[in-house]
Image 1 (cartoon, helix red, strand yellow):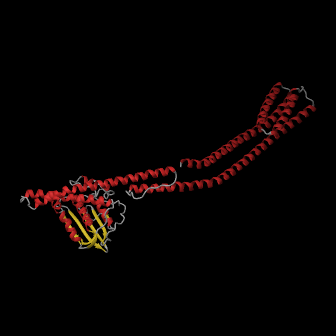
Image 2: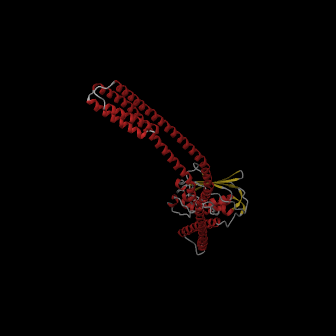
Image 3: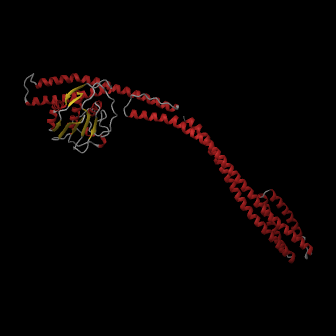
Length: 484
């Protein structure tokens, strides 16, 4: 993929480099032309002024015949020669020919001045004036030719600039389709695999391992998709191993637990003799914790079975109020030990649902409320119908829901900070089982704030559920609640 991107970038890079070189060449030429034009103009002006000064000095020497004036003439003549040589190096062909003529005229005048007698003849004076006039004309022509040369160079620079502009426009016109094709190739060839990778990573992060990951496109992205598919398969294997472990351990624990509960019931019934109050209290504690342990094991078995999709809904018709009464009776010893009061208002609703799973939903919610309720607190349990929906509310008077736990409480095996500070530790799957079973009934779990001081769970589900079907479970909501 990187090689392909590099190959597509080569023409663009060549175009940029070519444009930079042309711009730099035009800049250097323009800079040189400006310097030569300014220097040539100054030299031409100096040349014309030096010719005038040279003529004045020659005429003064002709009149006064002062040797100092002759020395001044020689100095001015040397200065004129230096200016002429400077212009010769910068001028064009025509200006050089004129400068050559100017040099010859200057040489003849120099010879005439040096050979000038003490009293020059009028004819010689007239000839000297004519020669200085021709010398001045040649100096003026040099200036004109220099200006013409600069104008020609400026015109040539403008022509080159126009040519470079046309070249860059044509180059841009040719490279624009190439750039569009490159963008299209990158969008289709790379953008689509990236979207596939993004979707696959999102599904893995949400715990959805049901879809195989196949990424097409460049070889690098295909290799990355293969690595993600390997990771998905590995996560599926680990999930199966975890569920297998839970099932085996739960089944192994059920047998000794049944024996413990059976022995406790025999003690409570007086099968080995009547118990005094202290002994009966100890037996009651054993019975209560046996029930709790059984509930935890049932949660583990239900969660494991549901994760492997090995069970569905076993619907039947039953009344809700007797089921609530049964759940509360099973929690009676815990409620008494915690001195928790109950505020129960349940309509005698006839449900068509999975009775066992509804019982586990109620037991987990009530157990969660008991665990977080303070001594002498109140647990509120409401159940009523709203059209064809059952609305079930369970709330406690505990400390509420820490904000840092609200996004994770329905995740399996998560125990919040508040749960770590309680004496009774849970498995961390109680609320996960609630979410799974409510979703299986086509309902939803909400967290309601403001009505009660503690955690308030609200379940909304159909009164009558089609039996035997296992609807697809929704993604875990980022709800806010206590961890069971």
